[in-house]
Image 1 (cartoon, protein in one colour):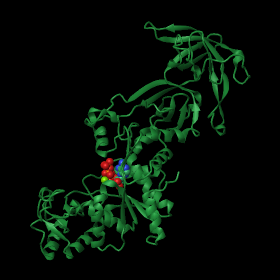
Image 2 (cartoon, protein in one colour):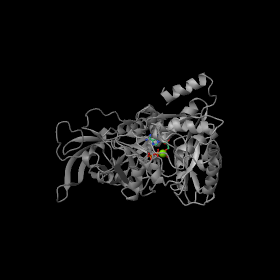
Image 3 (spheres, protein in one colour):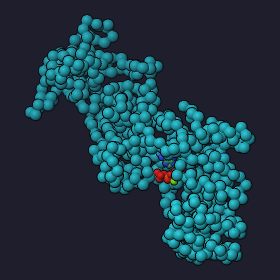
Image 4 (cartoon, rainbow, N blue to C red):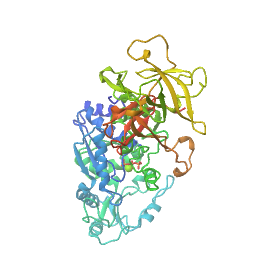
Length: 544
Ligand code: ATP
Ligand code: MG
């Protein structure tokens, strides 16, 4: 699926038509401090698709300018996620690759009288920043001489000062209506070992300063980001210009993607993991890409979804059903449709010979003949779903099995229920049926119509399996209470049942449609003899 027309595509088309740019270069700049979620997928897909459509390329650049929060583990996880989505960056860079160059550009600003060392603490700096209605207060250090600033900045670099004792600030305008322009801090002191540069630096550039320079150094033409950076754009342009960068990148902002019943903020996702409310970042209920992958979502479904949500200049919230539908559309013709009984009820076919197994042909996907046929067994004892049986039919629309009624066991024979054996509390323990050999599938029997067509698994050949069924971790209608208070703590249901023998050798990540029960994916913890399946989505939307 191609990205439809959108404002960014139009801008790029104009830039190419006017000769302003020749090769489109974009970048995806994640902070390596968390796992990516499906909101990031919008940024990734936009960055890569925009470059790809116009024959350009995309860099992956880890924004690791803040040494406090980074973790090498996330670097690998993010690379893996991008690859899984189907994209290959032309280069993999780190913001820290440019520390020396940023430093030189900061010196240039100082020499031009456009940056100064401030002695105020970070608290004082933010206190004097002013508000939307009041201008900020100029720092007493604002008019230091170039020489003094150069000396102090050198001393900052040399480690002469403690964290927070001094900062380097751009000298712009303390009365600007845009607060970002009120002498923003561009360097701060942090005596922390950086994961890439070790202890080489104890001053680190701020994102707003580092980011435009990085884009310029890499020759990025269109620096695409989400809407919260809109008020930072003037500052972005100011740094590119005043630092005399030989290349001028441009920033464009698109709306963030939100999904109903889905929390995407990194902070909340971390809270869920830290509080052990989920089993980790790759818990199948998490909206992280690792979680969605484990659940069984395909990269194709995620891409179709993200592209289908379009791209606009405002934040948007789309229904989680749309994502589910993309998965159904992706797997409808691809996945084998096989039998699994999630909540088994034992059925004994009294007049079928003990010890006999007959094998029947069953289509692998009745909407896609190309997937061929497989054999399914029929035997004296089979399992059906408990809710496919009611001792007496609840109403005249009942299309399943009851005492005295006859149904077809899919692709095999008609069976008729003649008695029920119950536990003390009245729940059926097993039911007894007879089969009619005349009704054998493939013989063209049409004399009677069955009261339904049930999927089943032959007991002697059945493979035990665990099925994980999920609900949303959170529903929007629960209001604005704190996250952990409105968590759905009953969102993971485990069922123990059986699957047909053709699934003996499934591999982690294989996907199936289980007749009537939905789409399932083989979990990472699945082993031969102890199969585990995660339900990706039901066959139809379950949202009422
Ligand atoms: P969060 O707000 O969840 O902490 P972030 O924006 O801080 O995410 P980054 O690692 O900085 O996380 O994100 C990399 C890129 O992904 C940024 O350019 C950001 O704009 C984009 N991005 C993050 N979340 C979304 C979203 N929900 N929709 C679109 N783009 C997003
Ligand atoms: Mg961010």
